[in-house]
Length: 190
Image: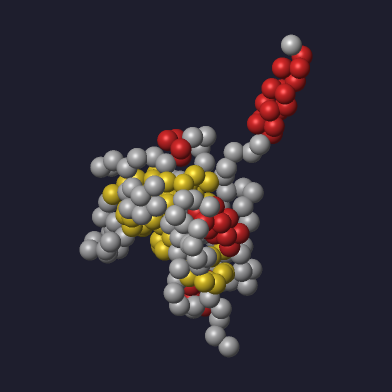
């Protein structure tokens, strides 16, 4: 009997010691894409970020299961997720602004952007300050053109360069995405 139980205990102890993934792959479905979102700081310390509706594949934070991680959109709700960007610049400790909003996995709702009622950026997401344990700088600004002004703007939905690398690596391991190219890191002109 002991011979049968011992291998089972080894397998169970390994399973308990294995960390669950930090990200979840979400197949194509409606979500809020905040990779280029401009945000406004609210009096409660959170941010309202104006995002776009997207229907491509995406990634979000792991919440214990695929169903709990990738929440279905409704007429009044979309989940903020990450879809790969093509290029970004880094804002470091010399940046004029070192504050940004964390939008990954937050709740969003279709709305009208008061700053531009005809904008495609018509998904209002309630994003949070940079979570504890996540470094505030460096952070990224998704753009196709490097500009010093990008690091002076208040406020962007953002992530760290390490977060982007981790999400890209995670997505490259998903079926059909092995050839996903990492985004280009833009440099200041010389």
